[in-house]
Length: 239
Image (cartoon, rainbow, N blue to C red):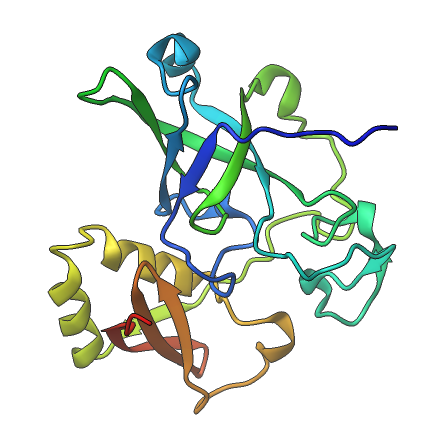
């Protein structure tokens, strides 16, 4: 078979500049706001006519950041603590024969721009900033919402829920950056409540300080007695 050529229709702009901290199921964190920045001619309003009648969209993306990763027949799903191997096609691991991603997002708004083009705002996108966008398709609940379907090794939400406690320094720092990122406080709290630590570290408690990149900021936090303590939010120095 000859090579298949894919043409991106744009990129997805998100708060995430590294993989750590991205929820494994973005649809569980509606506070993640993202924008589909489209290339011509796909940025013309005609290509999106009727899209506002749908509440949710499927994004087909390309895992562009895993350039050195090779697909394998088996992988270790984080949901299982990295202790068990399953077939790659029984998981949603990014290391696949073709690194194609599929994300279900909520449509927030189609924005009409001054140059007679459009961009699309969505919520719940679980992708890196700058991820190539290959296609968008509307979600059809009557055929795609199947309550009787089985979920294999992940039959339901993992239930990871932590309380978030803001230190005085953490709160003050977040407020200081709110002029640049108005939704920063809600986003950070939602991400940390989902416990972004690797599954094998979730038994650790107290002491270890984590850093999580959100936009161009480093969010610093730790977990003590099942509570996330948000320590500080600082700007990441540019290279």
